[in-house]
Image (cartoon, rainbow, N blue to C red):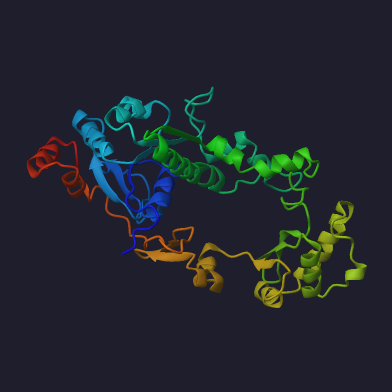
Length: 380
């Protein structure tokens, strides 16, 4: 079976929430051998959910990192690894005995990836927070929502995943590339504030050029433009319209059977309220699927707003293999796509700690040593 583009890469993931597991999933999806270090004694507070996609395609070992023996187990694994990732607050890994200095003393070539909300330093570094707080500080949250209304929470896509886990994975891969010439590992400090701020790069350019105003919901790409927004259909479902360029706008007008000569110029912002009323009425005459069928094969940039369940069944996504079934749970498939070294099929999550003996044996522990660690409670 093809190992994927990251075949041969070994990653140690210290179990955590959201961004670090997502980074581990991105790397595992692309073929890295990711070993997740879970708790030695799972209980009611076990992280994650049953068959969690954020734990797929890796092995798991149960280790009590509060014991010297457990810490030594993780350090032994790190000696043979390429990457270690963690998502604790600053200083926690160091207090565990698994910070960058401790790990690099055993393996100076290892890339040590860490993701936090605020970063490893700065006034807020030791303070608690969640995705909503980080994207609030980065300026991303303030731009999402309707004019005159409060900002809209965009689930936790921007901080935890786009500006967190994927940002960390990108940093880890960059550090691995640099290691090819230097032979040395380094620490990758991925902050969700920094990562979500990076996602707003184009917005800053548009603001500097006068192409983006100060109020959310009044601009080209934030729902302010009537030709770049969502609309309710007759059946209560929605379509997304993105007809910005003139030729796409013309195609949309044709699909909606509107009189182009009687319409306001679509880029004239002063007439956007009038144009929105026209589009609302025209789109509201059709059910969602009727209107999507009318737009099919055109460049009207009109598509359905699908639920996650509908998205998995859409013909385009089926043809692309955008979603897959892993252990009975439908979820996004690995990506992006590679023509020579495609990502392997994702594997269902293993029970927590299920691979402890196998991983330690491969690391050089014999049966007696593994039994002694188990008897002491250092491993599951």
